[in-house]
Length: 528
Image (spheres, rainbow, N blue to C red):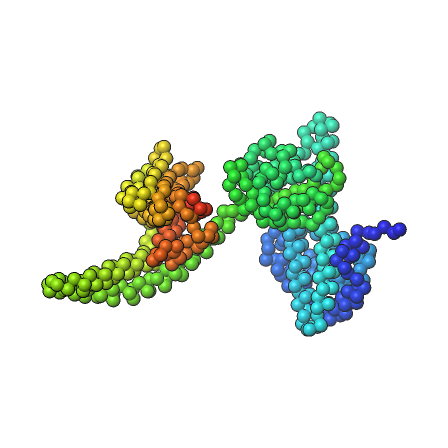
């Protein structure tokens, strides 16, 4: 019984057969005139990316690589896929490793090539392109698998060499290279966690300590998925796959939990390096914490939406305000005239209703203008305790009649921070009144206003035990979105803008029985 080679196994897995070879050979003839253009476009794209461009020595090398790329594309479309073909692809993969081309660029490069070849197939073959498209996908998947093997082999070799060096140094009594290995990981600025064959942590760098709040000696020997509270199925599957045996580089975005249970959004790149020896690293997980980056992007999008709506609101407010002022004057005149006649109470009541509605519209116009034309905050040293106490005193008369207990929980020591007292008070009043209205409408409850200081920021929480938001992802900070009947939907949008103008953030978490708005503000007005 003949032994199947690794290349034959890959071909069988992707179902690359003789018919595909014939289709690719015919496609190669059609595509040949386009291949130099593809090579030029490919390396023009490479020049745009600093990390990838750094592996090149100069324009002459790029020209040689373009010719090599044309040769590779020609070979991919040759229709001959034997062991010699496999060896040529392996050589290309080893060249990528040797010159230091980051693996991510090899992966994305394959995507660019795939798109280019499929586009040519569509242009040249039209309605008959389907079978050829499938053949192109299969052969490029084989190329990708073989090249990834080269990267994996390089990773395994480096890890094995590090282990051999460590053992050799221990035997001779000299300090081992482990510290140098770890120090290199510290310089990357990335989370680097290595796992043994059972999924236990055997390397945990300082960035991992910083992000998770775990000390290295607390987690070594413990299970990765358990320590970081991983519940996202894609990461769990990727870890199990990497531990099961050699596999391609896996990129997964997933939530981890810090020591205090807080979620952090991390993009992981998992590289398997299994060699069957229990004392070797089996999987390296390199991660980048994108939690703050995503939050910043979302705040930027929110500000853009608010700015666009604000422009509309400004124009609308100006158009409405003048007619409202005129209407209010005439209603007041009419009301005085009816009072002089004395006996037409129904007409008098009607004028009062109209007057109240005009006042409500005028208030809405004022909110429009506050939203559309925000004034920069007048930052002055401000007492956090005073802000909290003043806001509670203002809302207490509203809370008591609806059986809502209002609790003010200031910090034990006052915190002075740069703020516009009036504007921050406006935000707190808006949040507190919303909380009181929500909780009181549910039959009473409690609302808590709490302030605390962090290392570089202070946090103000408005927490209630009401029914919560309709949905966790409700766009409550969007202008004109309201969960209240008759609400304008501008209160939270204005609050968001005020907090953002203070270079702070405002977030919400909500579930039935507990809704918390958190305002985070910098302690130093120079902080961004």
